[in-house]
Image (cartoon, rainbow, N blue to C red):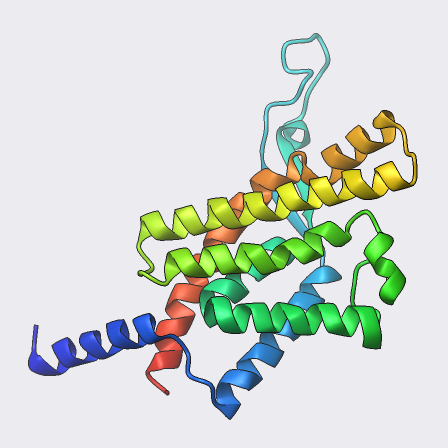
Length: 220
C-alpha cells in the first residue's frame, strides 16, 4: 500500500468515526433524505422471486407462473435504515423528525394523509419507531461498516420498527375497542411476511449507504 492510499484510508476511517459535520451541505443531505422517505411512502415495488406453490403436491396442473411469487413492497423501512446509515444517528433522526413534523402540521406526507389527528391512526407507531430504529442502527454502525455491524444494525432497526409499530397499534385498537380478529389480521398484513422483505432490502440499503458515504467523504 502506498503512502497516498494509506493516507486516504486513514482519512476515510477518521471521518467515519467523526460522522458528517454540520454544514449547509449536510443540511441539504438531511432534506434530501426526508424527501426520499416521502417518496418511498408512495412507491410500490414489485418483487418477484421463486416460490413453492401450495398445490405442488396435489393433482392440480401447474405452470411456470405458479412458481413465481410477486410481492408488492413499500420500501419505506429500507429507506429509513439507509437514512440512518448514511447520515448517522444525529442527522438521521433530524431527517425523520422533519418528516414527522411535515406530516403532522404542514403537508399530508403520510400514507393515509396527515394532520395532528394522524396520531390516532393504527400505523402511526411505525412512524414514531423510525426515531429509535435510526438511533440504534446509527449507534451500531458508528464503530464501522463491517458485515457483522451492518447485519446487526438491520436486525435491531427493523425489529424496533415492527415491535413498536405493533404495540402502538394494539394500544390504539384497545382505545377503539377493536376485536382480536381485526388486530391479528392487521398485524399479519403490516408485520407478517413483510418483515422478511424489510430485513433483506434494508441490508442492501445499508450496504449502499456504506459506499455512498465513502463517495461523499472524498468531496467533504
